[in-house]
Image (cartoon, rainbow, N blue to C red):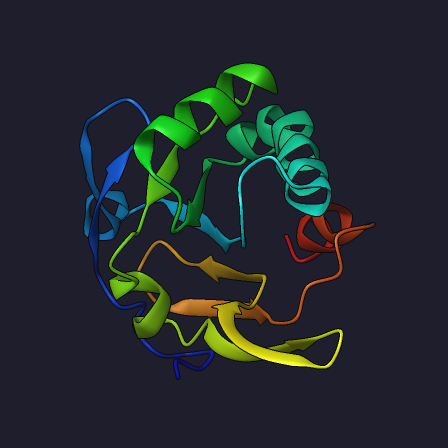
Length: 150
């Protein structure tokens, strides 16, 4: 599991526009990397729309926003279009990035245990180091909390 102050693990994932995105291509720029469980679910939609509504604020500070889930590119395209999202959604079907960041976890719901994505956000500095980690994110007010970190 990664910790604050460590170099953010690099990855290369396909984006909703079909391009390949490497985290290292953002060196020299701050990045908000957020992992979410599933496209088109209520919490994930609310979180994505909150980031969407704040993208111009982040852009003004030179901060890129990247969303990551294990959903397919097709699912990401529909989710992005339906909600007018204005930042890349990256597909991690093999869970490579999820595992590097320690967000693929055992979860419990309604008495059942299963593996799933722990909603988490990583603030990465221009130097590629993790400045702040938010784990077990609760969606209401999360983006405002991220903004307060800047």
